[in-house]
Image (cartoon, rainbow, N blue to C red; front, top):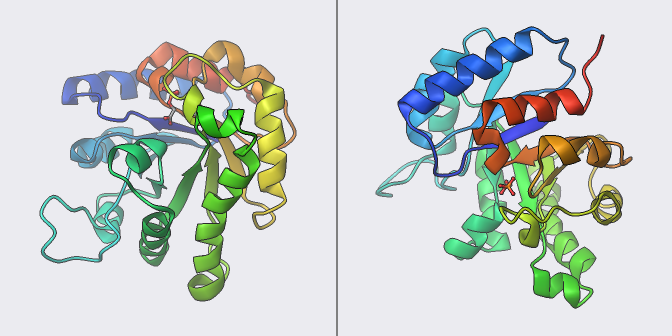
Length: 244
Ligand code: PGA
């Protein structure tokens, strides 16, 4: 599975161009990955129309945990479903850092996304300081447990996608080595329910994707910067293997 996180980039013109390039490139190969685009909210509706019957799927980058109400600027999970999203990223480190989002808030968002029938993509990851202090596994486990706790209490068998994104690797060009990523993924594998897909994110590019995907517990990627370049993004998908 490959998820494109456009972050706060793009325009209607950019979206139209990149989608037609990606969709036509992917239609020429025998795809064995799910490919999800997560553009800024304002483009979701138009992009849903543009991806039409292609293999591409749609996700949002965030959500408000409330169902509706007096929340100026808020976007609810039902609205995301209404415009055709199937996935919602929650707990991205940029939200945690720029907007001080806590584990508890991420858990509330998780409940809202699940209640709307959408698939949460839960992001976890450690800072450079936490890694240097040897706290990586504890930090990511704490972040994951905050959503596992609400699943246990409220949600029964709700599935989700987990994304391990070391903060020091996001947008820096400094990718985790396959061994560093695998160590954390294996640890997370031991915590999450069987069958949970665990993506890696942080400076994924076409030239490092193949080595990362060979790791036993890496099931795909959450891609930021490289998802804004059609050819690079398609090459990530190609390099992690297509059938036929
Ligand atoms: P990056 O971002 O690929 O630009 O490092 C990944 C992410 O933040 O999801």
